[in-house]
Length: 142
Image: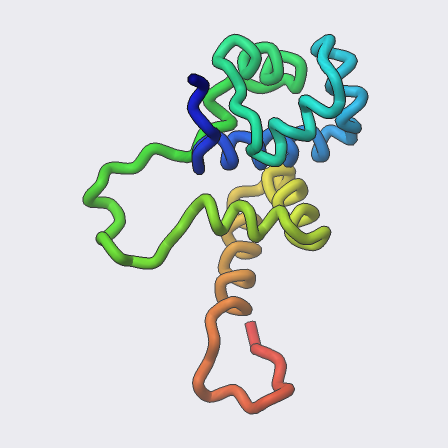
């Protein structure tokens, strides 16, 4: 009996969608490159179908990537305290769930200067961190 998809499958699917969109490819165009249906690509991206290792390799090659680019970063268990509330998969899903989030996710890796990427990350973090001294309607100063 086949196992059902899990959080890693959903993460891989979200990364697949992000990469495909960043290259300006439709699901149909990628499906044609791989010789499969666009519906299958849709299922992979939604995380509802698992991607075999050989298929992931073919997808990565078709998108000019390596298969490891589609997996979450492996971190030692002690790197994140238990119960910290951080959910990388949830964050990735949330980020790619909106057009603005997809634009950020697609564009951020294309910023060539590391210092600029760091500055953008600090701006986003500052905007996302609620300040107790802000008045309603006030814009955060960065």
